[in-house]
Length: 558
Image 1 (cartoon, rainbow, N blue to C red):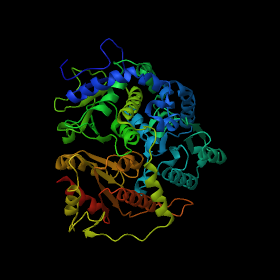
Image 2 (tube, one colour):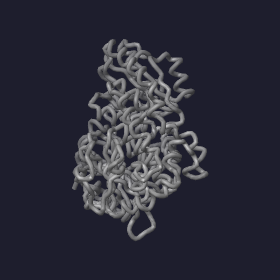
Image 3 (tube, rainbow, N blue to C red):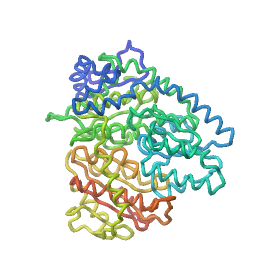
Image 4 (cartoon, rainbow, N blue to C red):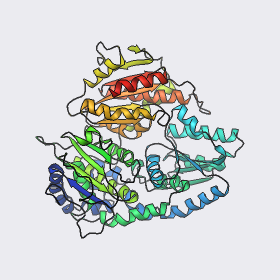
């Protein structure tokens, strides 16, 4: 083993996850923090659901948000009813599962099913085209409606349109809708009154981003064909180890690297966490971890910004001194076979099965929150964009005139940003000129992430161009993830919002607005809240969707 890397757990400790820090600053973090975390009994106190670990101000929230630590056992009773319902549905020829859910209700099931190689249609959007594309093959479709309260406007709208579509197709809608919600929620009551096929209760002591191993993660995944019992077995295999107050605890080591890697020449910590997958076998894990970390830590003007990148991306190969690189490695790889970080002063390689990694990262994020000095269980800025969007739906204002128009793209920006820019290229240059030396660029695309996925290809070129981390989020999905960090984290971001006209809108039954109006209000509401926080925002609106998207990709990829 080289002098600048170390493996946790120790060689004589049996483990299903391995955490390998590398680089002098990551090892400094481990040396500085892990012994103290052990002496403070942080791991065992998390396992015992001690709400005092994050300070007095966090006690009331933490006291009702630590149910996730025991899910490997407490979720076992879900396995048999999930398997039984799947067998019933298959016997009726129903083998296509659509998940209507946002944030924690959709990100974990997407990772679970993709990793298992089974089909799940994840509907976490309000884009009319993407919603319409899910309204197919209804004769073989069951819809899982997942929401803690049922008040999530996206999920409620999706439920309404599917219920109407089933009815129009001559299908008994109540037999094709399965609900996952908290006990006693308005959605639970409404579902019972409606007579839906099944209602699964989740644990109300668990926040959405920690809910991977609850009914929210297991029901849609199990109905789609995943062996969810095996997933719980993977978590159970590491639960005792993660609760131990030892320096070989991988949760403590990972938490120390995430929340305590020093920035050279300052008293601060590295606040950009860049994920790259080196053949881990877990599909899309960074997208799930992105929400967990951003919502848990991005508040009070501080926090950790997760960035999902490719292994060859510049923010991975030449990371800045404010960056920790996370390398997701294949199961079973060790310090001699896993990719190391000779190019980074702070990196960590992590491997292990999915169920184990869910629990590992939840522990580590909670530990990092303690080191950063925040409450990892609240999300004070998530609601602001929702409130703004609802206000715009209730009283739709006249459209704001564009600051400039370049072909099929309207240009709008926060006051003073554009200067004299009148083209898309000049407007992007003006936005990037506002990017501080330790900042980041957030690209926020309120489009169809399936049909227009090529837009994601601009992330790496923009990272190369700016020499800074770049996040890419599909709206409104990211509002339940990095949207918290955008408003509550360090004020060092610049924001590129991309919206578009919809050639064919989609009505929402018994609602005074359409999906097109809803996604437009969500984008405008988010941009407005960012502007209120003095964040630079450039909005590019595609009036000619196909041509505008092609032109925009060319500009952003140069």
